[in-house]
Length: 386
Image (tube, rainbow, N blue to C red):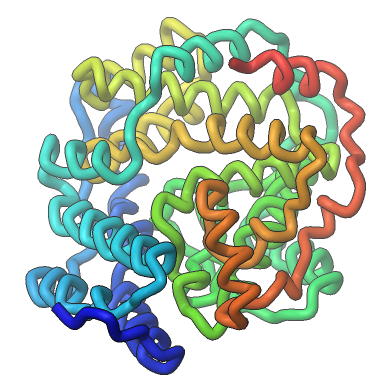
């Protein structure tokens, strides 16, 4: 080990660049989304919800062992600043864990246990919060703004119009092989729209504020720093990132009871994994016990059971509560928009900006400029969550 040698800025940038080069190959969502969703959905429905789907996944196109080796070969012991050194140590362990997730996709419990290590699982308090939300009555689904009527091609114009308020550009692609209605691929600066999905006018407002207003904003801000960790992501950034995204729905007056219940169902579904439920049992829990329609129940079950047990989805609700409380205390959200960062590393972000290794957010989420939420029930729920 090299001691008593303070790492130069250039050496730190070199370590950061090398890690960035390695982790660009690790886009978990590119591998965990099945490539035969619609075929397996048809079979599952025809089996009367009894035969678990057999999902297929994209092939892994990188050398897993070599990636692990190169990550742990980084000379972070040369970083004398303990805060920066600890941050990079956490980053290396985090991305090694994500590699293990990717290499075990489709291997049942192996993937599930690796996800537990990376994302955790709901606590009893989280499950109680979810069940509390499910007691509230949803909005009228027959209201005009909630009726699905736009296909993925027709939605492009809405996203492009919304994005005129932001000083950046991105690609839009379409896919039949994603489980979400839309998603941002960070490394590719691309918004992917689900070709199998029909969008309502309200959903488009939600997705614009969620996907563009936060996920794309933090993607673009993340690329402006000398250090690339802001782009590829701090350890466990998913909870903060999804919390920010759903909070943008809230601030723009687009967070509904129905949406909160969707997040609650995800917590219930992830909790079912911990209880050992298989795909069909989780589906029947949502569809029969909680009276969720079969399409919604299928896709929530798919999101949670893909790969062998993907626990990340419970973090949307826990992340929302943390961001909501953070905002209510009068804190500035702009630091959290600097990239794919985490609430727990705010001091480190401030320190890195002070040292010239990071920059303040250039792009700011439009919804955060003013609290336009008018839904008192949503406020009551968020204030009441434990």
